[in-house]
Length: 348
Image 1 (tube, one colour):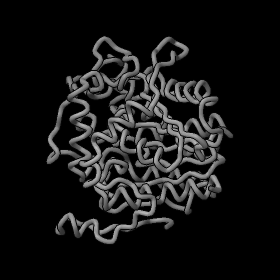
Image 2 (tube, helix red, strand yellow):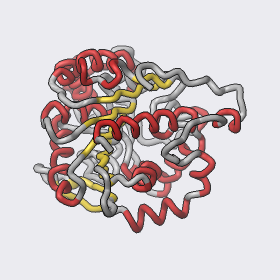
Image 3 (cartoon, one colour):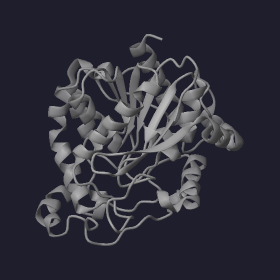
Image 4 (cartoon, helix red, strand yellow):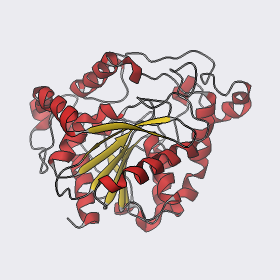
């Protein structure tokens, strides 16, 4: 399945009808099964996932988690989005492990269980976007001896920008990458209601780079499912919210002016970054995404040239931003295509 993928808008049909006929060759978890697998997922995370911390060059502690299995076929390295924590990805760890992959993930500096960078730990901050790239390189380098040599990337949102920059900076480390709704350019309208947040950041950001963008306090909020812009799956959305309520240390609020400036700056460089990548990259685009700018993903694909798998983005019509946490009717086809892509690139 290459190029644009049209998936039915199932707003007017029942759950049974939504899932009827959905191909699931890799036996990925469905929403119904997920609700029945709480104990199995918890046991897997506690007994088969190794966690720990590494120190970045500036001393920032970076939390990591990995799963390995005997004769694992390859390693999938997960790079998460802004505000996320790798603990949110327990379902995906479980599925990939069951399919015979080793899995490695971590929390970006300034979020999750990694070290926060400001006294107000709710502000999403980074001094330089290059720090994210170097953190990924540290994790990959330090933990590589423990995991299979053949490695592929699976990155979401901000993680897609980090992964893209990493591929251009460190060629030859990964055999392929799949990017889910990558933040090749942020939708800055979401930050504080301005249509051109990057322009405002240039004007105002210098006044207080470590303040919330827009200057209005915006700590973590436990938004209801009905008001969310990220997923149509209530069961997956509620699992994430419950996790963050049970572990409030994972919570993160809005970004700082400095983070916004770095996100805007990396967006300007994305076409140049894409032109330096020399491994196949599959780009998944959410049809109802309002968190990132979809047109930037297509421009990135064009700049990749022959390395853009399928020649265009794979558009999941109707899906919201968090494709990997979406309803089955969006998530299953998307992950199935990612796994087939990995099989092709790894020749397994």
